[in-house]
Image 1: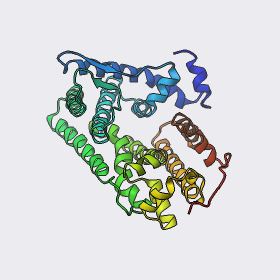
Image 2: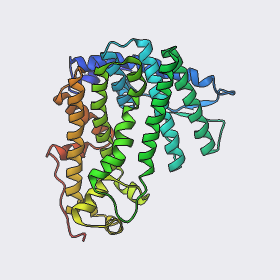
Image 3: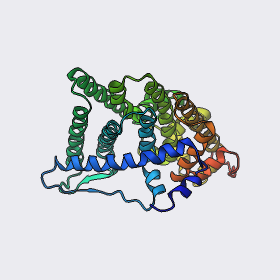
Image 4: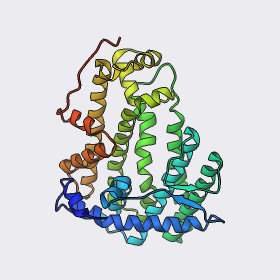
Length: 345
């Protein structure tokens, strides 16, 4: 992984405590992934699976695993031991893997970093992998504590958290009328965005009983909602075509008094994304996502994590770029102007 320091300097975070913390956490994250893969092998009789991750550079590794590394760095900043951080990372890796398996079955996709190559049936493969990941989580719980009462609380905690995320996903089917934007956030994004990112804290919060950890969790909750807002902006047309509720769609609908069928009709016009009804809602949604994320970073900073608003902006710019949203970031900063063609309705 060449030129790693220069890559981080390019982020605009030279000599900061934050970047030093992230760099030191990357090694722990790598150890976690290797330990996870080793444990996974013990549950597969033929040991045939594939990890499709490959990285060209240190920066590429950070890009692909940024929020996992960020979450583990929160534990590191609180002086939690490396062994426990590794177990927390394995638990997070497995929980996210279980969510991905469910998404793969629902959406008929093949997302993720681990695949069982001996099972060709899509549903069977994802179901089996999810069962294995649940066992890996329980193994990590055994490594963390011998207290049976605490173990039971941990199992109940992560199960309830996954159930809440599932409730949010269950509400995504789109009808002719879509709820107001605030209802999309309350009923869906808080679950599949905020609570999804908060999965990292479920077991550590029980095991550590650290109030500062709960403060950090509140910040991550807001950042998770912001990321889901960004996903909705990116996936607007895809969600519309697949009849999924979407925040930007809701914004367009209620700002312009248009039902879903009408939006589907006008969105097929190539000029729709340059129209006033789209751009006004797009601009508002981008602003709301950024400001909510910055609020989350502020809460994280209040918990003692070494980050301020300016560094939060740099990280967001970095995340926008790796998600292919560099123009959207410029749009937020009023440096990039899109022509308003209009005339769609």
